[in-house]
Amino acid sequence: MTETINVYQRMVKAAEIIGSQQWVKDMENKQFKSIPIDAMRNGVRAACVKVGLVHIGPVDIDYNLSRSDERTTKIIGTCKFVYINADNPDERIEYESMGEAMDNGDKCTGKFITNLIKNHYKSAFDIGEQGKDDIDSYSNEEYYETDARIQAKSKQDGFFNNSKKPEYRTGDKPKTATPGDPEKDKVVNDLTTIIMGGGTDCDVIMTMLNGRKLTDLGTIELKQIYEAVHPFEQKGGKA
Image (cartoon, rainbow, N blue to C red; front, side, top):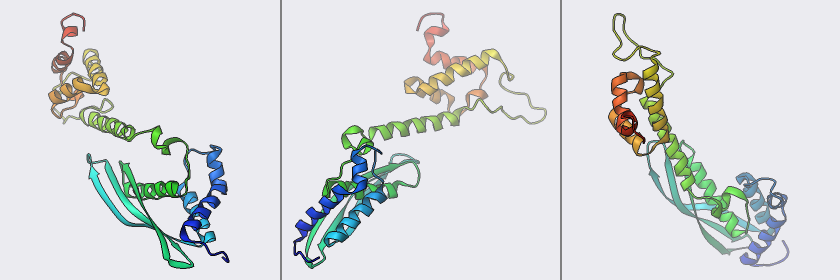
């Protein structure tokens, strides 16, 4: 590079180059909703090399990891990015970026690093995205609500499973009604529907089950549980 320009001017030129690249144009044409991290990193790297910027980051990562349950991990943190004038290493710009991520598996750390990088690039080089990465288009409540549904489903599966029949040793007599009992099946189905709906009635049923499955109980006890959440129906009245 023959032209002598400072680190700030180089950042401006890098932003101009990035704005003219095809992956940004594709984004503006809404051909896809979220810029892939590899495309973003490659585009920024190419622009920095062309204008003589040494790009370092993320560095000095500081984060807080928390778990709301056995499945869900959440990370919130900050980091720094540094841009150095290749012709004058004493000139540099430091940016601080923040990010967050949540995952029900083992990908939370990777998501967190990706979020740090994308948040910084979008801010430093004025890169826009459409859809879910627009901060005004969603909130983390969506993720928490989804996770709550997963937890509820897992909790329900632990208490009942209509696809399995209880196993008995030879000579034992079942303590519950025999399979195919229409009266019991109806109460089980009614209680299952209530549990799937969640809420206070679901909590009452779970408490009364005390770790047992619906299919393990007899018809009389099932009716007693149902009556606890629908007393008027059991007495012939209107709920």
